[in-house]
Length: 310
Image (tube, rainbow, N blue to C red; front, side):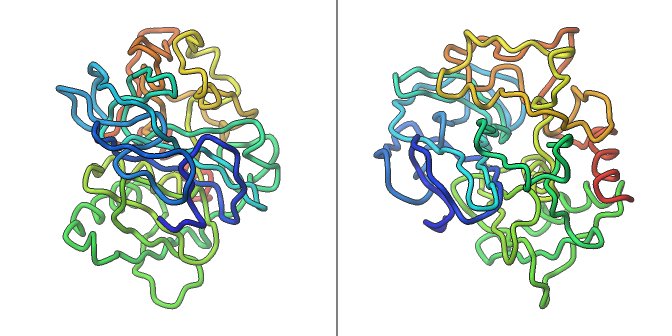
């Protein structure tokens, strides 16, 4: 990553880029000092790594252990950017007390109270989308050579979004704003249009579903569990949440896009994200599965259509 975009520590830091969402891979042997710039080598905020017997975006497994040497923190720039951390492999998070925890595929957004400013979203009452969407629902893209061998997967992710909506992905020519799909230590994307060429990271560990999730962030949507009506549908077990990660579960007023709550959203957290011990951090108030990464739900599609006036 560019050092001007990313930082690998727990402190607060200002940026000059748009709101970001990202996901990173954890390798148990990787170590990272606090401080310094750039993505952590094989270690991401919360200590991410694939759990045993688990597919990306799939069910939960026992979390691997990792001594938390560093973490990603979300901070905003002059336009109110925030970082979102995801685990592309679906695995564990760990805190600075060497506590391990479960985490699922690429969906961990830190939305701490000072990270999202009013000007970054369409309206104060609607925090599910930023105020800069892609003009005419057309998203120019550029595929970096380091992911050229994954063109078929990238095109499949585009198709999953384009087929049911008016959104189109076109090869970049001379457009000012475009996404640059490239390799990295995980999956990462800005939320909405950040201006110019904005990187969308698609690591080897990212599945097509992970990429779809990131593309939807790039289109302007945040996570489902941050809706202001979420307590009617889910319960947060705060005692199970890693203390430093509680900001990930903070309600953001009005982020519904006039759609009902969606357990099936590809943008919803799984049940044990940022858990101190693998116990559930999110419990659905009625028995439901959450955290899938295989398809857009019908409500995901409706939200994208509403955002882009399809």
